Picture 1 (cartoon, helix red, strand yellow):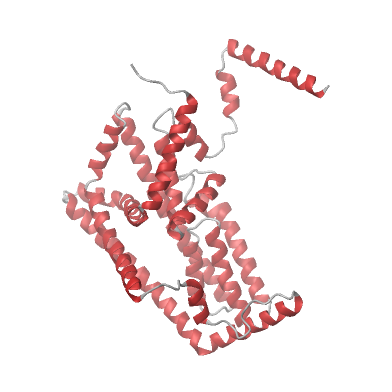
Picture 2 (cartoon, one colour):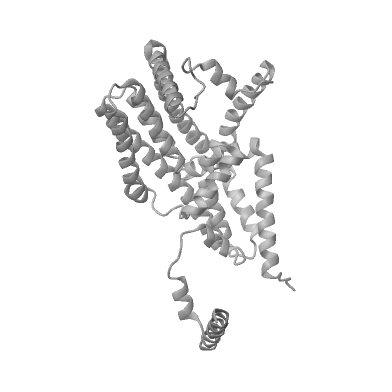
Amino acid sequence: MELRLPPYLRTLAIMLLITMIVFFMIVGKGLIVPLLISGYIAMLLTSTCNRLERFKIPRSLAAFLCLLVFVALLTGIIIFICMQVRGFTNDLGDGLMAKINTFVIEANTWSKKTFGFDLGMPNGFEIEKAVEMVGTENTKPTQMILDTLNTVSDIILLPVFIFFLLIYRDHLAVFVTKVFRRQDNDFLLRKLTSIRKIVHAYILGAGKVMCILAIVNTAVLFALGIEHAIFFGVLAGMLNIIPYVGPTLGAVLPFFFALVTKDSVFYPIAVAVSFTIIQILEGSFLTPKITGSNVNLNALVTFIGLLVGGAIWGIMGMILIIPTIAIMKKLFELSPDTRPYAYLFGEEDSNWFKRRNRQTTPAEAQAEVQTDKEVKAVMNNEAH
């Protein structure tokens, strides 16, 4: 005999489960973040691995080839970014830092005279003070070495995780079917395939949008004559992967750079207007056209997810939280008890009440009418 819990107890159990998940996300950050990154990359490479296996290539060799190509591509991107960063930092010592200091001193003087507020930089922007503000006082060389080793070990773990996830992907699918053994296996496999396709489409779509925005931003900055246009354009395109926050940061940096290096106010204003127009076009046309409704999360859940992801895992959490919530939404759809939470994560269905009214029996409709009459009568009595 199956034990049925009351709805409020089921809701409480689900809320406790979510609380436990958040707790383990905080405690196991060092392991969960690399594992999540590896899982999403493995989902991205699964389709290519399947194609190689159709040509009678062993799974382990197919996984190794996919991983090798991905690492080579990622290495090329990192080298390109490092070259742009190096060119930007080299120019900082060729008079650019002096311009920044002059601008900061003038801004500090103007703020003190106009508002009586001291920015705390009367001698300009001092890198040593900025490092002291960011760093902790008790940081020791040994601790810095340990932190560096931990970062290197995390980077080394990524390809290992990806390789094993590609090899054991069928094993993990069987595990899910055993957990949800009351569901039909074909239904579960379709759901797992849809989850993989959602993550695959999201990552590819986000990558295409980033590349297009990087090209458009760079072209606009070149047209305005802004120095280091490639650096700022690519950086703005990459930051677009963080919803809401990333595009703003991507526009702020070239705005202030143009404000410091250019003699006319026209250039920073032109940068701000151009980036705003680009983001409007991206949000209304580019992203819906490329990514479509694959993630299908409402704006409220997305914004709350960004706050939670940033609070738990920092910048990496803000990047990982969107596909993670999309996967949770698909998992909630597997059970009737959790489908309301899947709807909570998704877009609003404005026709739901109309469909519900059409499916209501005459007796239920009469009961609802009677309830409405009683509610109206109570409200009228309270009004009088």
